[in-house]
Image (cartoon, rainbow, N blue to C red; front, side, top):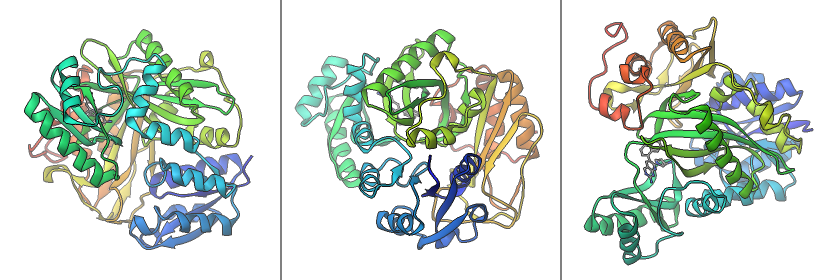
Length: 457
Ligand code: MV4
């Protein structure tokens, strides 16, 4: 096992990794930028190393600085968390060449699934359902038109190096496809340095359902059920839950089997997520593999009772999976709200700054993962997540009730937060009926002023 791990991240996930290491008896070394010098989790680490200024490019994304810190602190492994270098195949490769374990999948796997068009081909060859579309990349507009004729409009043009919603275009006819093809290529080239695109049938207002998987170095892969992440706005998730109200045990088994087959094809060794779209007819389609631990991994932890960060560390150290698929048990219903310092009444504009008072909720069925404390200043340099609030109860109805109670209890004085809109969504009849898709937030809450906490009671 590892003796010492370097945490190459910040905020709540840095704290989460420190907690996991502590329980495993592993020492932690946390790197931080000048903007994070007053982070409280630094006190929970065994050692801290400042790696540069606030700008992420000069600290959390700076590979030489992080590797130097790892060498100086003499760690066995690096935990990248999510974002920053988590899905950077080159960084995983550098770690390997320095004899430092990367707590994530192998660089070859990250690269293979990081190319979305390639991941699509892998899913196809694994026998998983994939959205109808092009065989590999589309090199010219003529090919794009031919593919669109075959599969029918509407179609989506996606960047091979994209993901998470960047570099995508929808086309509903030939002229808009020609336009979108060139626009998507230009955008992809500018954003990712790779103009390659592919074409897929556009699934209108799908649900976003993702399967958590774990794979060990012996090639064993299990799935830990799904998370429904349909409540999102501009690819920023607001509420996640498990189980999904639109997934039956039978559908879960089929989606799980598809995710496991894809992970095996990718030689996936660690924690990962296979993303699917689920349409109104109940058909599901593979879209992407996320080669990292995700923000919402906590939801799966609550319903499975597993510590996914500890599992990531153990798997990276070469341990075998501690359980078989048959031994995975799902208990109750978990809902998570991502609490962001954003102003829903100002088009979700990030609102960093001083948190004068921070009193998290507690009591039965409540979990809060947050690095914030009273008097903490949220730096403007990174994402604006304050923390994650989870409610875990026997049933969905009870989980919603506990979440509403916890949201009411949560005191965050200073920046405006997403809490008012999350309260409204949880009270919405369509959400309560489980009748919501990825268009839900935009349909119901776009541009509308969100009424304040007191008014909405
Ligand atoms: C799609 C799609 C419809 N059809 N692909 C957006 C993020 C990226 N992971 C994939 N995305 C989508 N791909 C086809 N062929 C709709 C989306 C999509 C979406 C997906 C998941 C969650 C929220 C979303 C919001 C808008 C669009």
